[in-house]
Image (cartoon, rainbow, N blue to C red; front, top):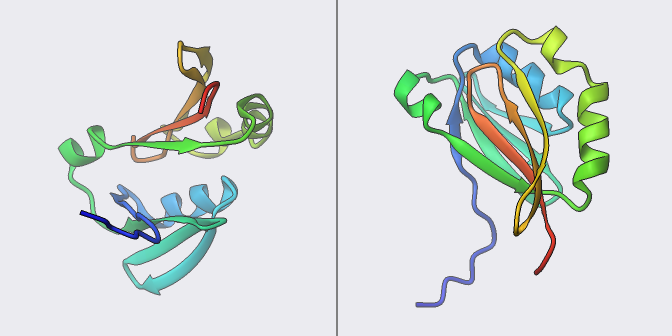
Length: 122
């Protein structure tokens, strides 16, 4: 089956929609408000939907991997944002090196785990 896909956009939830919207804007995503309870956040041609919806077991099991060109540079810029001081519940985990490449981690204000990584081989 040939998809000829143009994009893939996961839906994620937010414990506090207003706080999460601010967090993702601070993280460098561009927000487009779709309705009072949903926005789309973009970086380049990639995007995801943020919903004003929260189910703890869903959020606790949500993980997103975003490939970046240079994880070392990304980490330095991420730390400079001081998100852990600005947003309750946000956690940053420094870069780890794996067989496939390197990644760092961010838990958003709701608890969603983001992996920001760089593959060493393509």
